[in-house]
Amino acid sequence: MTLAQVQELPKNQAVRTVRSFLIWTFTLTVCWLVVGFPLVFLITTIGSLFAISLQAILPTSAVLVVAGAILSINILVILFGAGLLTLKGIHPHEVQWLRWLNGQANPSHGSVFASCPLTCERPSVERH
Image (tube, rainbow, N blue to C red; front, side, top):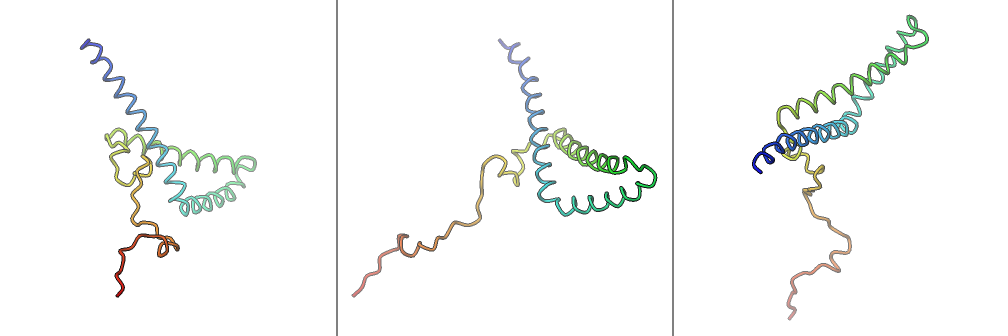
């Protein structure tokens, strides 16, 4: 029985590592698309200028070469970052700013509704 438990441990560790890598890949992709949008716009603008200048040398495939290079570099950076974070042993559930990923919201304020003065409970004030 002990041997079965010892053999199951590396399998469980491999599943955790793959799961961590996939979660990091998803998280970095979402962050890149949402937070890095101005940078993506700048990269697209520079890529368009490269495609126009490369059109004189490669008339039929300049856009394909530039777009493929930009997309490949973005994918490689995301996969490299996810791999680096996974190899360092940083799990997504340990990172404080990833609470939204685990479904643990941490609102900084409560909701205030316009009807609250009429419907919310207030301590009664004695009138004389």
